[in-house]
Image (cartoon, rainbow, N blue to C red; front, side, top):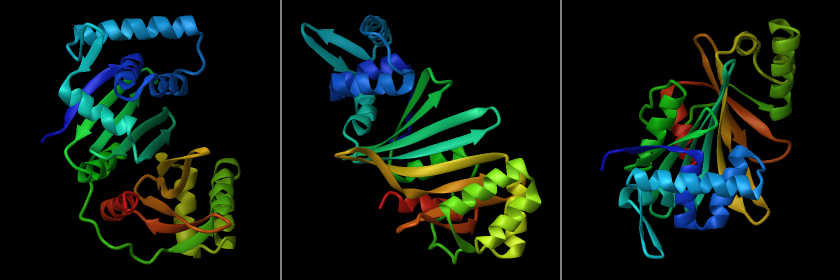
Length: 262
């Protein structure tokens, strides 16, 4: 089976999800993306979206029953019945882009939010497709998985955040000194600080699980893309929160991403 794509308005996606997973799922999606809206506005948006799905042939109505196109419904099921999701964020000067991989009992689907109003939904033929798609999202080429090599350093999440703040406010030298104080070898600290001072983008890849108290994430990794170098910081278990620093490439990215599916 090849990848299949659908470009939808946020409201169209919410209506379709409501048919597959119930009105609560649909309402939660709209509120999460659009923010609080009046009941009248939400009702009007959903009605218009339903007519749009009918016109596109993605929805049919027979009496009191609503039916979605079979492939389209299959792409929605991982969103409605997710075991977990992997959320990818890419932040640069122009703004933030998001890609989320929903893993359900029957498959994996990718959802990308475009300009906060359009949803691109992709049904993936296998979980391996998520690694390829996510690597492309970050401008990387996925490579054969391999065991993680030895990390370059281990530092706390707070120390990394402090160095990033210093790079923006005080410059590369201050950030490098902060990283060295946190235990990063001096030569590596200089390179990381240089890329912190002039990043192409910052990224994160987080596994999100639905728990009784709500969505929670304690597994994943952070990314820093400089002019030429890529850095990956894998989240380690324990307190205080710590990160293992790796020099990034397609193979290391693929291995870290695949680990989030285990």
